[in-house]
Length: 242
Ligand code: SF4
Ligand code: SF4
Image 1 (cartoon, rainbow, N blue to C red):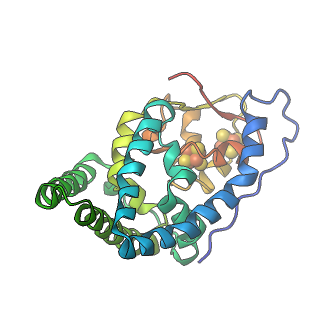
Image 2: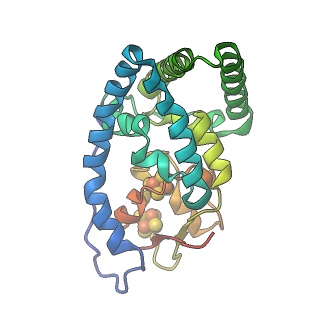
């Protein structure tokens, strides 16, 4: 089932737009195009890796860029800069059952176990293949292919971004950038309509900020801004400070 595209409601009777919102709504207009492009590139990158193993070094590059950005902007990388994340939103979503991602996917024990397993595997293979760059690149390609296979299965069973809770880069970025650019909600504007919750690619619930100081699993927010743009009351925005 293809997810319903979010529409961005007009501002309505609310006066005084919150500071970051106009710029964000403009940026969102191009988000879908960027994701479609990056998502279409992703299978090409994987296929190229099987022919040219050195292309596998694309993966450590993604790790460095994703984590570097996380230190300042949270999981921004995962939104449309990550080709696999884009592939999930732009293409895999069409095949997804769109059911609830299990809560234990979001919790530390499983995430730590996946991270530890993949890092141990990576270290072992790097030591074994060192210093042959072709053999190392080929392992990165294999890793990318297998984890993408898992991502596709989970995405079809649950929701397209289910893997993003288990991805090692996502898990590390979630801890590293936990307090960066958090969502804020002007409680007096919020009518608890839940429109912000409906289209969140990570199935987060920004509306809980009406009653709570923090959103559960807020470190996994991709900073995509879909919820900010979807709110007809302009109640949501990102705090620029950490
Ligand atoms: S933040 Fe906006 S979209 Fe979300 S529940 Fe409140 S009024 Fe509705
Ligand atoms: S909470 Fe809002 S900004 Fe964060 S991932 Fe969900 S829709 Fe995007």
